[in-house]
Amino acid sequence: MELDGERVVSCVPHIGYLHSGFEKLGEHLDYNQYVTIVERMNYISPMADNIAWHTACEMLFGIELTPRCKVIRTICAELARIQDHLLCVGTAALDLGGFTAFLFGFNEREWINDLFEEISGSRYHNSYTRVGGLLYDIPPAWPGHVKEFCRRVPPALDDVQSLLNRNRIFIERTKGIGYLGTDDAIAWGWTGPLARASGVRRDLRKDEPYLCYADNWDGQGGSAVQFKVPISHGGDVLARYLVRLEEMRQS
Image (cartoon, rainbow, N blue to C red; front, side, top):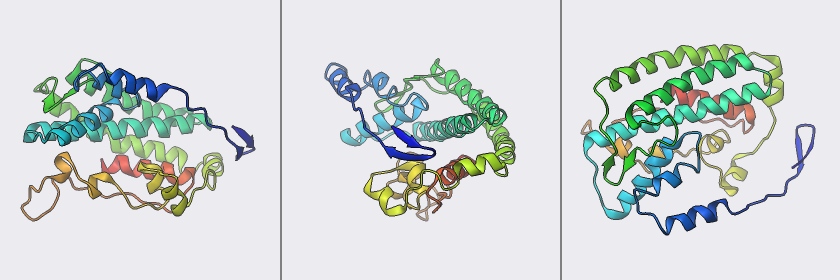
């Protein structure tokens, strides 16, 4: 990649053989064994990969999960979302000299690692899901630990926000940088918070709901999980940071 200050002048992609290797390994593993490969595609929030892989398998096989399994997976999916966003926000701050904001974010991320270790035995590469279920049921104390984490997160996000949102250096290094408009974001296949920060109103939890996002528990067509999808039209690094911050609050 060639840069001129903050502007990308040229970029040459080197694809390599990473994904081809993943596909080759899949020829020799069954649907449960392959989860150990899938979760290495995104080691930042591997539980999300666990859930995505086995949800796809279950849709293919026509397998219906138990309500308890759906709830546990949905909680894990939201924890993984926070886990991923905390790293993205924390390391972005660190790259701009915001070491304190980085520590605030990673302190909460360690709580999520502990929660995942409690149910799977591993802090990373959890391999927790199975076709039609989970590796283990949750320990009796786990829901209480999750509630305690949920009480900790909003004040921690307030601390991060107070350090960064009015920091002149952080704003100048993120506002207007890496801009991508809505049409280009769609054309280039951007997804998730990157797309939503460019004004793309799409979230699979709403548009193609699964797990508890799809359950009509109130009998009136409403989802069992209520949340708002943060959207920004800023299209720059600052907008992506703000979208991730609000997504963590919604989770």
